[in-house]
Amino acid sequence: MSADERVHFHQRGISAAYEVAEKIQPQGGPIAWELNSDEKDLQIFKGVDSNLPFGSSGSTAFSAWIEVEGTMAEVFQLFKSQTTQEASDYCRRFGNLLTDAVNLYSIQPAVDADQRDMINLSWRCFKSQFGKVVLHRDACVLDVHHAFTFHGKLVWVRLLKSVELACCPDLQTILGLVRMHHEITGHIVFESEKPGYIHMGYIAQTDVRGVVGDWAKWMVNASIKKRCRSLLDVDRFLRENRLSQSPFLAPSQLTPMRRAGRCFLCAKQFGNYRLQRPRNCLKCGRVFCRRCHQHWHVRMNGVEATAPVCNLCATKPVPVNQLPRRSSIQVLDMPSLLKIHASRMDDDQVSVSQTHDMLAFDDGYSTTPMFGTRSVAAVARSDGDSSFYESTVYDPITIFDNE
Image (cartoon, rainbow, N blue to C red):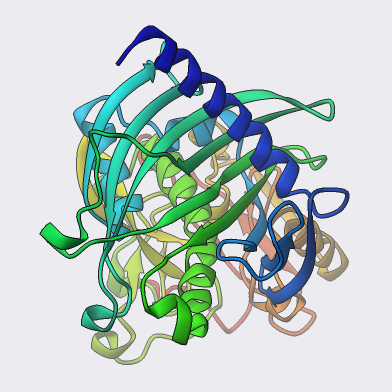
């Protein structure tokens, strides 16, 4: 590739990044967006690009928005793929739609460790989400990562835009791949006004081409909306990375399973262990029912593993240096408990219906679930290397069956 061609594609890549920022604007951009689906924590919009002929292929676009807890640096880390470990994590998380990919040219190599700026030319093969009913698609694209200031805010854009290259001809007659066209597809990220949170948007303006585009547009729209919903996965991936950065407890530090008569979060009593499948949280050591914990894909000492972690620790793990000592005792009445629960709901966006089932952490103290209007004495203990809580309720209903 000549030097002039490299300059040309570099300029197209930078322009495409600004195109994403312009088009995905909810208001004032070239696309008039209308709400298509309002789902939990996610909004999906549909619009028509005014710069393209009305009704033309690719003029219809979809976008989605979500606000998640995290930082720009965490997003950069999430999309890195330079080392073998990073590439493995990236393919496991984002490569589910790809069957093959080849990097053709590196226009602007990534010079920063976080890969916030780079431009490549690549060929990608996308598998059909509808099995053998729809043929696989392929595309020759500009793959761009670019950080810049837009309307006074630092934004980061990751996008794909179709280009034509002589070295990458149409492969339908040879491999049966339909060449699709990415008018513009990508993510945009910027910090939220809410401290510790970021806004993430996704735009998909594509023409899948082929026969399916003529007789089954509903199938195409369903596929694109499914990709929009993949924004929800980003929140989970950020939490997995966050969990991997802090130590997990050893088996000797976990609360014995048979000592736990109830779930530490929702207070559901354990009956049949085989059916209810309670698990220890490997962050705080407590025992939780199957609804109050999840299995997360994490790295333990650099090795991929699946770890059970409770919903509270997955939201905001309690730092080890903030765990209270044996002498830390506080008696909390009902108004104080409600205030703590309300504060946690505001921070972690927990629904009101979960208030009386929530276990709250505040100022390093652990409180047990509430029963009626009885007061609770929260006794926090730290025994040497066992960094987790143990609570005592002065009530006939106890959380743990004492041995």
